[in-house]
Amino acid sequence: MRTLCDIYKFVIVLLGVSDCGFGLGYHKDVGIKQAEHLMQQETSRIIGGQQVPSIMIYPYHAGIVATLTSGWTSICGGTLVSNTRVVTAAHCWWDGQSQARTFTIVLGSLKIFSGGTRLATSDIVVHPSWNTKDIVNDIAVVKISRVQFNNNIQAIPLPAMSDVNNIFAGVTAIATGFGKMSDAQTGFPQTTQLHHVTLKVLTNAVCQRSFSDVAIHGSHLCTDGANRVGTCEGDSGGPLTAVVNNKRTLIGIVSFGLGDSCQAGTPSVYTRVTAFLTWINAQL
Image 1 (spheres, helix red, strand yellow):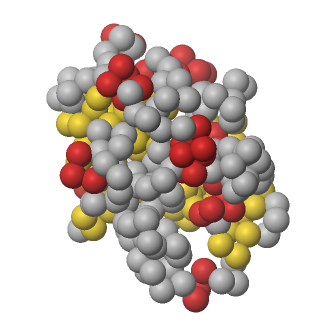
Image 2: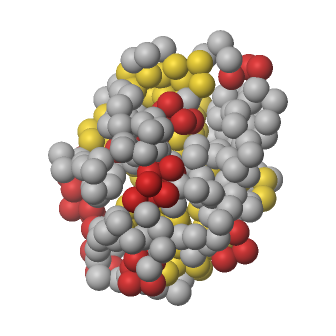
């Protein structure tokens, strides 16, 4: 059985000061000083995934380079849902301890630190009920300058309102991200590239068994960690997608997981997009 402190070790991606003695928010765990990230040598990828050969496979994926008020730099992911809007996790903007000042949205590039269309913005709408204690409503909409769609940059559909009660259990989904590929890796070098991994969606009841002190709410969605694959630090805010009604659709936003290891084979938890369709559409 996992304790709350075990969860905090990964949910440092979400929370501020804890009682466990390592009170670091997401950006202190993931973020690196602007002058230091050039010196990092470790590769950092989604856990157990493979390198994406072409951005045209996932033209909706948005990299996010966050400049914090402290002057540090951190990274997240996002999803292009229109030519002026990107959906991400609320904790990428405010993690309970560190506040971002600006986002650079990276579109149409396999590398987060170079290439593609790069748009700076500080126009972020965080869900008004974002709660760092209960880890719920972890969603934000980023407003960007209008982009021109092409083979490398495309918006992904949101679920239809008719799918609002679809729990997607058993569905095969794909997560994409620039985050860690192993627990041992700590840096995000200039060569950091996009990776993808295939995952199975769990019922929330099955997911809850791995979380003894954090409630899995109806607004959460989980994928299993079979074969020790999943999401990790640096992937936050990125997309979980599945084929729904014959088209690839955004069903989840990377939120949190158990903290002792990203490679422990435990579930990854996402913000369930269908739970926020009305709110998202109001921001478009």
